[in-house]
Amino acid sequence: MKDTELFALALGIVNPWYVSKVDFDEEKKRLDMYIDFKAGSVFKCTECGTESKVYDTAQKTWRHLNFFQYEAYLHARAPRTNCDKDGVKLANVPWARQQSGFTLLFEALVLALVKHMPVATLANHVGEHDTRIWRILEYYVEKEVAATDLSEVTKVGVDETAARRGHNYVTIAVDLDEKKAIFVTEGRDSSTIEAFSKDLIAKGGKPENITDVSIDMSPAFISGVGKHLPKAAITYDKFHIMKHLNDAVAAVWRQERSTSEFMKSSKMLWLKNRSNLKEHQSMMLDVLLKCNTKTGRAYRLKIAFQEIFTLPREHAEAAMTKWYKWAIRSRLSPMKEFARLLKRHWNGIMNWFKSGINNGILEGLNSLIQATKAKARGYRTFKNFRIMIFLVIGKLNLQPI
Image (cartoon, rainbow, N blue to C red; front, side, top):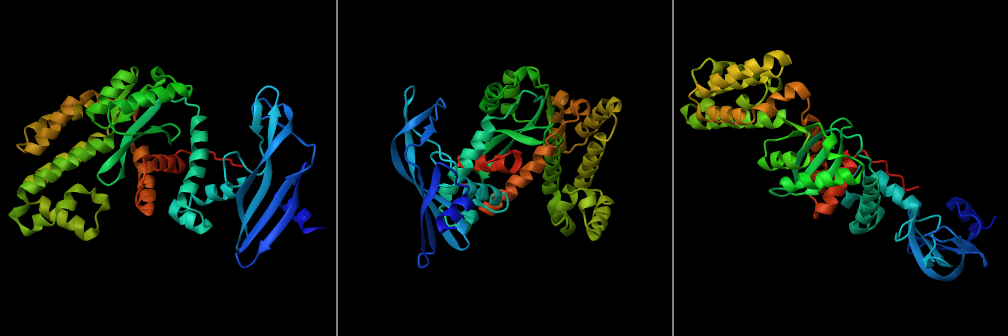
């Protein structure tokens, strides 16, 4: 068997295509394979599918999978068809998609590796500039995202995250039933909910089909949901509620941290759940709770509030009302302010006992995003960050071959 026939078999090249020549340069560590087609061949028009004669050809080159440690490239005269209906069009070739400088097999390798390493590392591994790798990812991610069917989506979690420290926020919408990201956009104002609503319609969904939305207490999100998801009952995310409560406890601690050496180093004892404390930390917390401190009183309010979320729905509102009165009379300004926040958002907080939804799923997914972002040391552009979010938590079925 000739070497050209062997490489044709390895590449899956079939009639009318054939491998015409193979060049191997050991010094450059490079393998070049040249592909041609038989004279008189016809190809399908990429617009209408009609078999058409070749008008002319365009010389093209594609990066292929390495041949052992050697870079491999395919070269071919790509035919342009002359269709009676659609005119001159570049025909498809079986080993690569149009407008790509890579073979399908090379792109498949990139999609497999990106799940396990940052793009910059991947680019270095395959010997390509990372901007070329991002173009591959953008094509397949956007293609799959555009084809997503959102007609069955009814429960949504909406949250924000930062692409880089301190700025460049993005808003992510998650299908809470399927536990996957379905929408990502720049910003964190009410227009992001409007953008989600439009995207929902474009992909077969209906804003009026959204029955429940889990969000934080952002006025922008509240306003956006009211305007653009009119049938959705808002459930304020329990994780964000607890963050506000922890902030209130921390504020009380700051007011009296100078009263003793124990108090100065005790902040995390009051903010962590006891189950997350080490044995000596738990013992120290018990000692501090026996002291008559304002932070100890705030901590007891916090524990009592958390326990309300373990109660059955029929007892929850009465317990929440009782807790509110306790906090308002506590003479602890930060706790009183949290109680007023609770009152202002009462219905959305109580909805948790009815809907049972929260952004816990989104928080877990967000931890994956943050881990990926840390490995990549941030993302230079929103577009790249959006691509990575869908790759990590979009449950996309990317099929280059």
